[in-house]
Image 1 (cartoon, helix red, strand yellow):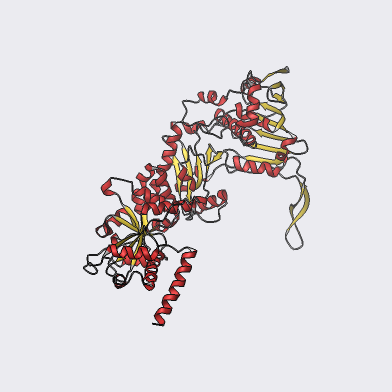
Image 2 (image 1 turned 60 degrees about the horizontal axis):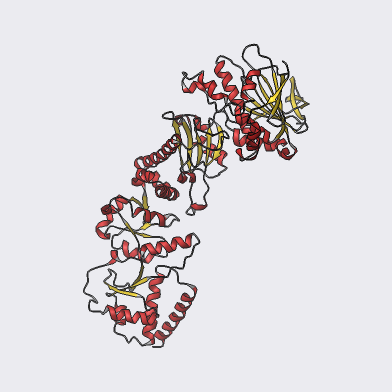
Length: 632
């Protein structure tokens, strides 16, 4: 054919700098674009020639000596007119036009065509100072075509030399991007982006040196009867780097547990087994397949990094794209493959439309359905998972009200006896004794004495000791109708569940005791109350507003440490003989003051550790009181 020259398009001078600088955030994406286009070309050939039995593949050849990377396919190829149309008109993508020819076909017969050359092809200029195309169309008596450009803005078109249908893209790699001439680097990029593409993707090292191999010599045997071999030099063959039939494309009924675990270990480099998984297999109202794994989540799950890999027709797009994957699901690990995702030209970002939101909503529903199914049909198994998945479920409830509505009956409370109950079950068992409160401990060992006070009265105590629990309790207290809401109360800071009607100490003067303790402690604003508590041996408790306490805990948790003053209430048990005796003592007596301080500190210690100066004073005072007892 006659050689011709020209400009790629009227806008090329404006488009190429954009492509090179910021359209593609990572330069290695050029390999994904080129290999994806090659797979698309094979898909087109398969559609036009459904009876063909040709072996189809894409080969990426790295030639470090020539400073070239070649991407070859055995696909449909292009005529000169198609090169002019699809390559020289940058902003035009041929996939949409091609698919119109098959708009009456069934979806599964169309194949997964992401796009043709268009802008995706031009990503190769990010790493190349010259790009060539050698192509031969599979249609009719077409002639081979050669296209070459050094800047993506001007080109030469002439006769080519390809003998079989398909396309070669030859990249002349720039000095600045020579890292892509290392085979290990190309393999790493191909594994990441093309590891599960539809057709075999082969990697070839053009500079690979022959290696010596032992080859059998006919049927000849050695003296010991073993097969006789000879040494020959053999050039390494191209290696396939992808799995064309990934696990997520199979039907769940065809997959074994060991396959799920093996896939998990391979993809996420996690040596621990996942707890369980959800296999997504949706054909309507959209095409969506994937596997979501539930790993073990630690209490400090804020540092946990999940990983949801997003694919479009087996082509890797990106990790953790929030438009498709709800934020709370990003604590999980898995793959999502949606061929119909509305990707923009760089395939790295989604057009935010209603279709994407429907996908996100559907994924959330499938996760909720799995949790509810386990809860309702395999409760013992579900309870075994609960400690590991509780942070995820609670976080999801807080972040997504629809998710909460779906799973609220599957949210469990772990209790100090090691058993589990739903909120509804806790209500039924305890609310006649607790005035609609859920009593909990956030430190089972430290607060053991306080826990026992409640369990001895037949009140169950929940364990709320994860990083998310403070937020979760506040969230739960505002859910549902007012009459159905629950209040969370910590066992060492609430007395409602411990009150008891009694005449003991009823004549004690609360005002006098408040004056006594304020003077002894030097706390003029300390609030002191007298209550009748069920355990007569309990001297006192220190209580604090629950919401203020949670606010301070969250402030410390997130490193804020706002200067929030303590606001404690000292609750004295009027049934306790020590309290009754203190009420009769001289408020100016030094021993009385020491005893008041000891009562207050012991009550404080039941709730939280004393500060350094406070514990020093407590120990010093304890020694003095012991000495007084011994020398009495």
